[in-house]
Image (cartoon, rainbow, N blue to C red; front, side, top):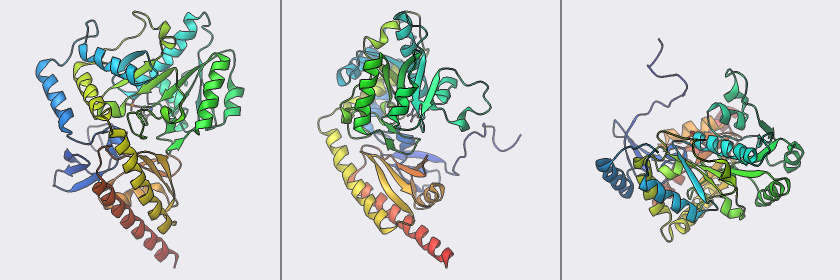
Length: 398
Ligand SMILES: *Cc1c(COP(=O)(O)O)cnc(C)c1O
């Protein structure tokens, strides 16, 4: 046996946090870190939000779990609220993002099956995508590093280059069921599909009888300044997977669908033990209470502008470290000039937590409740880290 009792699948930072307060994490030794990783866009309302804590503890005193063999009132309520706030007519609750994607993939395949076209099961995805770690979702994501060693890749996913609409169109065959994409790629490096591309993909799906599936597991629930990122383009999907932010730290996800897209999902064809559990539903409803409050998303957009302008100034000052800023709302990325791992370490040395992503980007995903003062504090830490890196680089060059 080597190291700890845990699988060695995570390259963990040597940090153990004991408690969280809003945008801050505190280690066992009392050191404070500004948390602009937010559990990778999970802690949408920061740590220990009083409304979430109250919702969870009140529910915990009443009832933790009942099977989906029975009515779950909190589930019905959260489902109705998600339907009211989105394109969707129907919701299936899961425990994670990957399971929400699995549900979306199964729903798309069943749609064509009940339409008498069972041969239409293939799904077109885009390079740089991340849809989860189950066998089907690693096939959908198409990244070799996640597929390697796990036997034959699950059949039925065809990948084309990022935002290459001509390639997407050419990839459509008589077996194609759907097109799946993240409106803003998270793991792929905060890369957003241009609004025109989303509009064209919607058109293409309509012309060819395909379903359009959005993965808003990371970019949803206010992260980009709209409740869902698709609202920026005014393009509605037929199916959508959500998770991360909706639970505010409690594990949960959901697959949203139009009535038409979900018509194959009849009694007995899909299920879950824990999905839609009363504790998760209490928290999900509490998250929506806050995010849907009048003016909340306006504040996210105002703070996002402040943060983005500040970041652009740091990038101008230290082009040897930061090449540019990308992203929308509080889903921002530093495109790095030097290796992003190095930049991430320098930020951590400044007690600022961020998340590396593909395309040599550092993700900055503060809680949506972050204050102006915390944004200024983060900017000062980022500037200090960039200054240190720039000075070290020029010293090394001499
Ligand atoms: C995190 C993520 C997933 C997978 O969610 P899990 O809860 O880890 O299964 C899927 N899609 C996107 C865009 C994600 O960011």
